[in-house]
Image (cartoon, rainbow, N blue to C red; front, side):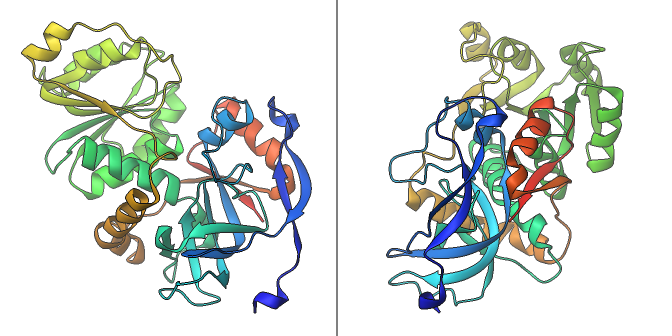
Length: 333
């Protein structure tokens, strides 16, 4: 099987940072699966905000990772590295990868792969890993969200926001989201949010206070940072947890630490890409046990926006940056 693999493949990358137009098709060698790795013949690759930030020159690939964009893929296993016994050639999988997803073939750690169950479309499978790993770790592990609590999510119709909404509902949370238009608020409620606040039309702090009858929310999933942080803290109930996963509004925030002490807040955050292979393998195991049965049963599906051909990656990035998308964008390889 390995001998039938081509020597080269089509990929999309960039030589120097810039706008979407710097993304270009190129011919590169097919990577070889090392110990503990599998080579995936890619069906679809997810498009994520970190891909955009990498293309802009602000989020370089970690040491040893492919310089090509793409942090999640679905496809079939085309080659097995030394020591891989849990998978067979031809198995349908989706995987979290450190880079390299925008290509015909992509390397993945065998223990960072999840099986694609019957009934899950390959394009949906490619839309799971990055958002699912991120939401599960930050909302449920770092944020300690549990049944009966209330979660506030900014960007309710984004890939992360829509996944947080659906996962939150399945695990018994009341979900409040913010969106930038009445249309997106309506769509967020269709996705599953209990409440949707148009942050351009009203003050989300006051709206949260009204929705929760003054109590506040237990967890904030924050993708904005900057001047949103002190406003987020005003939304938190006693013992609330504030989890930051992106800094789209700026890296610095000014907060009153006296309030943090008095109300016993927890401030935390994380990035996924730089975490160790061992951490990601353990997270994969936990998701396979806790969440993947809901995927297999059809109860959990990602919200899909649009698919683009691999060669149209620049258009996919432009679509993401314009901000009109609802759910996940994928590249068809």
